Length: 238
Image 1 (cartoon, rainbow, N blue to C red):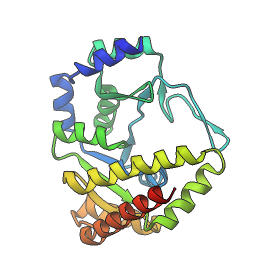
Image 2: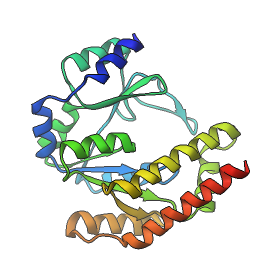
Image 3: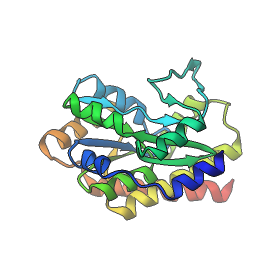
């Protein structure tokens, strides 16, 4: 069945209705490496009641994060592969992809709900998904969260995952982060924000959304360049 999913995804295009929906919905994408703080920022923004949390669909089973089981409809819509195929056939996704053998995608219905409630559609997403949204509508807002430096970032990852992640998994996360940072630097899709203190990060994003005031991009991109250098140094020594 996984082969069927891959074949369907290869040929998949969202419907014209879905494209128009994206163009007429205010959307904020939160992007960044694992441990950058996307989940915490998402939670802060949702407290304002100005945002609608877009819940993605996935075919992977629920996990336990820091001792708390994931909830269907809150963390993800957990579906089986047969349902995923049906949704693809009916063109019910805006975008979808296979990651580590499982489908992840955002549905048309989630964005319809955001539009009905007249809220900003909010979701955290990877760079591939961001690229797909930007190709549908260049006005989609994408915030790329950056940890302030490599040491703080590694400390956050250690606190988040503890001893669950082995050395090779950790290196794979760093390689993924390196690709994400390169995409941020090269694509021109993102407003980069240094996430040092959540209150400051929240204020910077609020100023951008409400007033169009961009955070200091020169400073943020220097932080990104240093992170890329530090990641490469770490991987070369490991």
